[in-house]
Image (tube, rainbow, N blue to C red):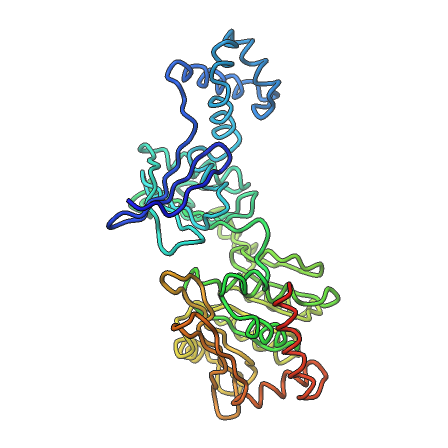
Length: 433
């Protein structure tokens, strides 16, 4: 086996290794001596009964051990006992070190097995974690409770958000919507990635980042497409965070993923009824209603994550009204996007509102990249940027983008010559950041 990485998450050791067929993400938690296991069990029971006591406080743990007459054993194994008490009573049990690892972006429980996706590597990793039968279902209920949501055989397929902001999707096997109880946790960094971060990670060059930022500042319509996990929402968030604070941003997402630092940001989410009652349908607030509301909020920018239904027309309406418009689509490229928009009734006249289509992808061994950028010109679509495999670089050229140049200059209120200087200066600014 080849060791790819080794680091710690608190007291837990993490080792990432590559074998012949699989990559493994292995964790090694503090060892619990056999003689101390009963102490842990008694302390867990104590804190479950005495809810006024806090297992996270050292003094409360000492008091509990004294009351139980286990102070000597507790002192002997204090390091391990403290870890498992906090993990199991205040954390997320066996998944706690995975959720705390900032390097992981996806954690998936499928019955008794656990797999992860690491930010620095491609694909899913096997782990050395194993769940007992029924343990995944118990965890599903616990996660729902921690999020202030609920899950039950009546509502066996649920999505909710943990207090840390991570997105959880659960399917219960007991309700026969899944072979095994599955839990998928999409993790988000505590601090959203900036445009500078994406340039540093080589998702795009600084010149391309400068061009995209200027298109957004000029209140253009930018569509970002790509496969799942290719960084579409991350890129949209990084671009929106460059908008000046005096401009208002309204975002619409089915599942909260965007985490903007912007001071003038309104986030809207659909609401689904959580009871089996026909009258509850009146409480439903759908995507279309939210987009209509966004247009009435004097928004300078309207952004939609994972647009896919007839509500897409409202994004184009926002662009027609002069708002900056951004949207992400799950699509393999420009041609697939055009087919989907055609099915949704978006004709050539509305397509002319689009300034740029940004295509993202996942490159094996390298990670996320912006692979192509297209401009809507008088003659159709012109490719103005692309990723070059030979040297992992981006080529940007506006020679065939006369219409885009006019739009950018008009949106910024400058001449074409001044526009060229702004793009150059902005690229230099990104390089210094």
